[in-house]
Image (tube, rainbow, N blue to C red; front, side, top):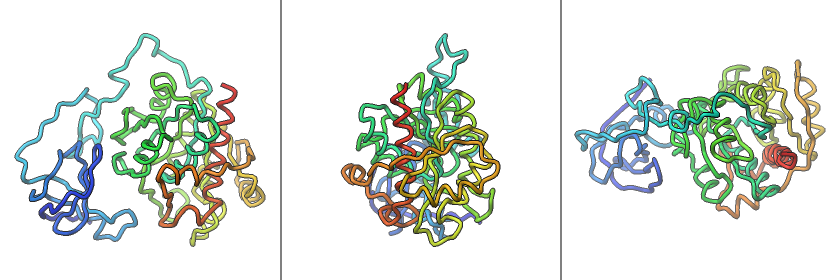
Length: 347
């Protein structure tokens, strides 16, 4: 199914870099303004209504596809590496690799860079809040993969984390776009974080809009596997941020999520698997059922992070619930941040 219709922009609800939120014929829509240019009240636009028509969980907004009130649009780009390749929205994103070559780029790895790899966009917040609380002077990079939403501009969470001083640089990898820096793939994004952008620690996760089908392999979280293995092979100190919780109505996501269990079974790593002490008995029992298991379980006290997020104006939610309603969910992510922070003390 695909659905488009034409309508008129009523008002501009909000704007930030790369994104406008507007109404079209009284219904909510967003504009990826770096690709389409901005719209204004009265403009006639074509909107993609498919996600709303299907009632998808992240589909509460239409997407403006083109502004019919604009006859042409031409914005010069910084290079030649295209993202959204071979679609009508392909554009020259300007990756750092093509603009920041240096004589010493022939090799080298991550030199022990702590890399937290986690499986939901919302988990980025407690991870970085824990790192910032334990290592306030650290420079934190967020690498957004292309496993879910492609435009970083859609992430209210990252905008808030950046404004609140919890993320220092964003890097969009693969077909994802809109970060402070663009990279061709996750491995190169991590290398750039370490050697070009001054990061002390990197957090790798998909953008908003995780896809799951209830099957073992049919979910976007599986993108963690190559991220874990690449980071380990390149000499990073990899920490897996588990998805775990006690409040999800679905059995497969209570306790250790089946997403994390599958990732740990398939990833060669090796990686540190962060387990919060308060939930150790539950999680160790479930981790013990994974075969093969090639990683090291690291148990830590999870730092309290919600007050830091609240102080930055962030009311963390996940899967439609306030994160505060599921302490296991928050603590498990915060534990991953704590393990990465401890690794910073040895660098």
